[in-house]
Length: 448
Image: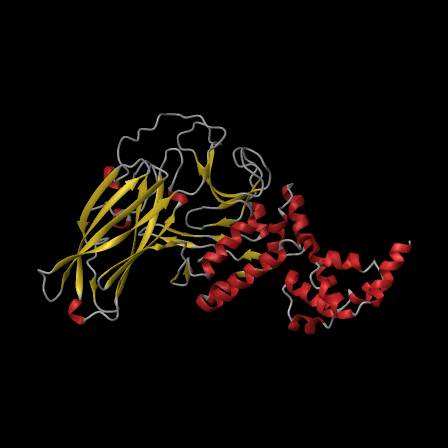
């Protein structure tokens, strides 16, 4: 009793400024605890600037928000905490990601912003949980309090990909549509769809329970085992360990320009900054993307598309104008097997390069090992002198299959013969080991 009285007396004797400085380092839980220590601390913990910092940290509130509500910072914090308190560990991260994404899209492709839906209420989320009989992860609920996904439109918010006769664009599903697609069938039990593509039927799913070899909250593309007799044998390409990491990593790739905006759509090409090579006046850079909807684990068949940018420097002399004649590829798979391919032009074109000119094209490749890299060169001739021929380096770029998990209920119906190479020229057009592939014109650098 004497010690408590001594502490209270000593606090009462201290000036306010050093105490407020100490309190400014505390989180809201500690501030509330301090308010019960003494009357002096109770008065100081109500200091508005302390709660302004906490409102900005946890709820991303601004002076404009405070003026609109007409409340003191402490009361504003309490109001938000009463509504969103269960999400206090997730809200600031997800709110920042949503704000960053909207600000970026508002500059680059504003029409996509119009498809976003307003957030849902706690009661609506509780109703969905009762409907599907599973609890939703807290971070998923938090995100849907901010925005309830988007309208079913094209292009989708979660990225696009286009080849010569193949198109994918994924919408972020609203909670009602997602609940309608909740899976109870064997092989996909307790899985909730997050995205959907109209053109391919492709979805990314989130596991709501740790069952059938999945971990709760992880996100994946389903990939039916084509060699198994049991239709519930479903492999998975893993895209994220939980909703927060899945969503924030995607947003980071968008707002940093890692995923380019092409024709008002987000294209999910990944560009390794090391994949750039300059020869004289010409620079070649490469970005790649994995296509899960055209890939499988059983049989091992991994499909990638890559986008190449060829650019001639603006400072190049006009007499250095040239035209691409042919390409050479050296392809090395995970087993160390090397394949060399030569052919005229690129995807049927022979681009002419002049100072400042940029030529971009997309092509694709398929292979049976989990990784592969390609490198090579283009052969050009000068327009002023066709006899002047020179090579331009293509930087080495790697294509690595994302992590995948094999089904726990696998029964192989037939052995898989992989003695042939992954060169698409080995297959009849349109077949390619039973997969729905793009046509030869945009399919693979090996196609001549």
